[in-house]
Amino acid sequence: MKPIRLAINGRSIETSVEPRQHLADFVREELLLTGTHLGCEHGVCGACTVLIDGAPARACIAFPVALDGASITTVEGLADDPVAARLREAFMEEHGLQCGFCTPGMLIMARDIVLRLPGADDATIRHELAGNLCRCTGYIGIIRAIRTVAAERAAAGEEAVATRCSAVAPPLHISPLTLPVANLLAAARENIAEPASPPTAAAAFMPEPLRNPVEMVQEFEVPAGRPDVLSLFQDPARVIACLPGARLVEPSDGRTLNAEMVVKLGPIQAAFGGRAVISADPAHWTGTIDGQGVDRRSATRVQARLVYVLDEVEGGAATRVRVNVAYVLQGPLAQMSRGALARDLAARLTGAFAANLAAGLRGEAAPLQAAPLNAGALMFAVVADWLKRLFRKR
Image (cartoon, rainbow, N blue to C red; front, side):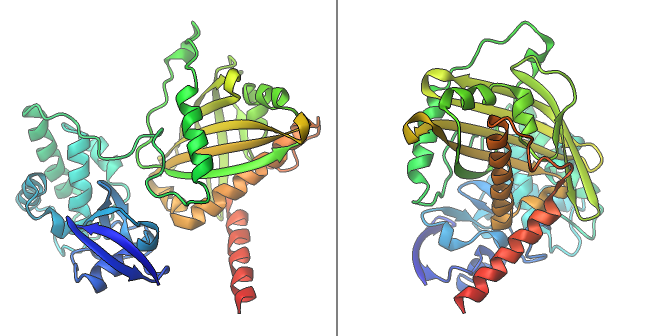
């Protein structure tokens, strides 16, 4: 058991929790807030959606033990919220509910949509609701209800409300072990100079800010000096060559790139095509890579930001690369980005990138550049590792 402090619907709570108890079970069984419904318990259906520090999140894959100090709002906590009250009326007017099982999660997500996107159209609402499933209504009434309230807020001149953290903000709940690295990366991000836009059509590409991203910190060493590593990070073709399953689809101008990354998960193969922009601050040995893309077959959208810091080791003969990777995955394949499994997969992808980077700096062919990236094989390796650790403890 671990002691934690939480604010639940505005009420401060101090208690002890089991590390394996997820947030949905905690609010339902310990606090009797049964408005949070449990469906798939895999973070896919959205029935258990709550607000964590103001942002919608899946309660079945969030754990109170990792949320010490957070503010949680369940659907009961929105009883007196005027936006939620208007949405409840609109759901009834537009016949946006039948059995009602998905409705609490739908209302919380709907409230987030109309706050962030007043005047949202049907296409935008459908995209934002991709992670909330309903087996009854066919979604038409739900979309009409949200569109009605969003239109009312736009007509009233209501401004968009930022309900989610920005890409440059540090994680809300970060492990103490990674805090020094995160602070260093945050300082580096503040010092990164934005290069002037070149007079090309590529300058029109501007990465969108990440909202409520999954964020992880990794570091590794490569057998080369800092100037060589910094030079590689500023060369789009060499960076892409280090990413398993990735390739440039057209020549780069040195600052922006148009690339494709193919990911295979069992029988499913997704090809994420998109753009990225590279910037660097050589004086501080730091830089960023911002990108976004979409798999046209499934309409799954990915946004990512990588911040790197280079430190000399072994008297300058080698370089420690510290990276902060933040990403958001939206759409039908978004279940691939859930919880600790996604972090392990991302860590293994970072490991493959490090191996390819080291090989490239030695002038060798990338050993892990097979295409497409086999996420299924990585996932199998993650599960195998978990099983090994489990049986070692017994």
